[in-house]
Image (tube, rainbow, N blue to C red; front, top):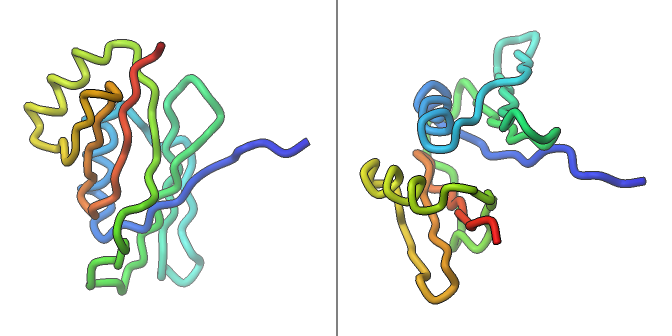
Length: 121
C-alpha cells in the first residue's frame, strides 16, 4: 500500500512561517529535526485530524528567496466554515487569488507559496 506522508516547503524565516501557519490554518508542530551540524531544521506541521504533515525546511545559511517559478503548484485545504475562514484570511490580507465561479480562493504564505482553500461540499 502507498499512502501520502508529507509535503515540503522551504522557508526563509521559520518563526514567521510557523506563526503564519498557526494563525491562518491552525497548523501546529508535531515533530522536528535539527541537523547535527546545525545547518538546517525541519518542522512538521499537522492539522490535528489527519496524519498528513507539511514539512517546513529552514536552511540556516539561506538568505535569498526561493525561486517558486510561476506558482503552478500549490497545497490545498478543505474547510468546513468557508465563509468564516474567508473573512479571516481577507482581514489578514493574505488572499492572493479568488475564483468565485469555482467557489475557491488562494492564500499566499510568507515565502510566496500558494495555498488553495476549498469548501467542504
